[in-house]
Image 1: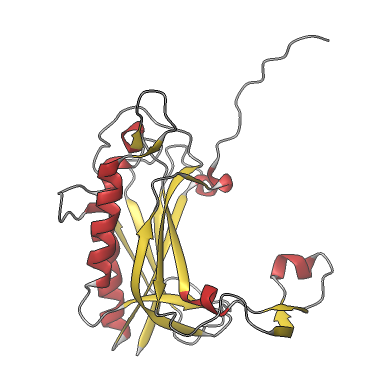
Image 2: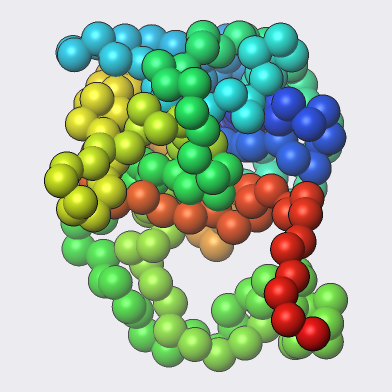
Length: 246
């Protein structure tokens, strides 16, 4: 079996690589060739496909994402790197182009909608026993933290994943008489249907990826809340500053 990591890279109109918006998906299939082909088809369909109510995820992606520079799907072979180690260069790069959004008004780029998904968590604890050898994140190690630390394992968390969809246009916003802004029903429906299509792939190929377990698990379900989330790394830097006083 072959496991691939597919990065959907939505290019910012700024043209800077640092401003790109990235979502990741993991798939497994009998061969690397089959897994690569599946990843390209499935990721493209996630954004551009429609079922159920007929709404597409691409309809709600803001104009901050270029429609003249095609979005990319970078596929990496992680079959022997399930522990999260360096997996090298892409084994395939494909492209797709997003359609124009339903609204020409954009909302801040850091605003996103989270599609959560999970594999079978039957019998797993949210918080496990004390573990004296939990790997420390590389960034913390870089600043002097030990390579391992003591804490409680979180077995269920290893079977969950998230896709933060954005940046978004105002078409993603539902407002009602001054009430709190929530996610538009049509976007929730589009993500619901996209999730079902991923679950319905032949051979149940969509996976959650646990680097701690160095394993992948078959995705079995998920959900979309009607509240927005924030991805701070996607925010755009201020271009002007207005001061007052001395």
